[in-house]
Image 1 (cartoon, rainbow, N blue to C red):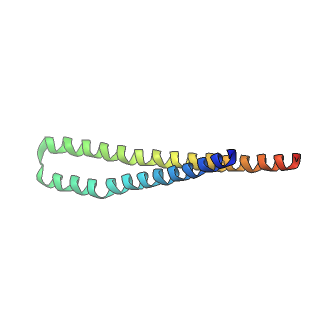
Image 2: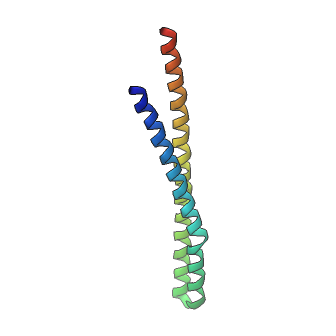
Image 3: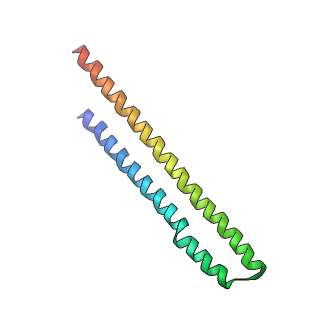
Length: 101
């Protein structure tokens, strides 16, 4: 029963890794697609100093979106590495337990 709990944790971790990956990809796509398209459309109709301020703010926001996506990607990779290490440790613990019996 205890080993099933560990396996369930690995399954949950795998699901979270996938969710993180999907979230990062959605952010990347949003920054590169709909967000960029909307900013471009607004730029066409918004002239002058206020338009330039908006463009600067929009670029800062796009950088933050892209940065958040990258941070999520790094978090996903760290979680993946932790899962791999935990799986290795679990295998080793099983081997030690088998050797002792």
